[in-house]
Length: 152
Image (tube, rainbow, N blue to C red):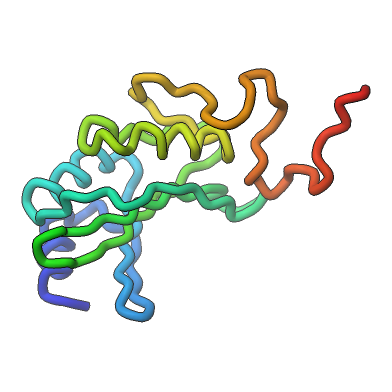
């Protein structure tokens, strides 16, 4: 992996749980509790000033962790890109990134709506696409493929 990534890993020593590279895409898996500080370091010290995307990933029931929240970061000056993943299990919360990147607001709401992952400290964590009384979360792997029967 690149020199800048070695510097990032050195600065985030102790919170990097895993790393990988595939087709020049660099990924770090971080400890969830370190997330606010780690994202702040990546933005302020390493210039990852753009949150390109934030999404959820369901590994399936029985997996640990059950979910991942994935952050796609970009340094607009050097064009460096970095993927950050944090694991979260059912009922656990992920610290919000809204204070670091304002654009995280809607992305976190989308992950909440589609996967049911909650973001601690989010200013308005409400469903984005579906009504508040909608049962379940459509992108979870246990969601019925034909939907719920509302006639019952």
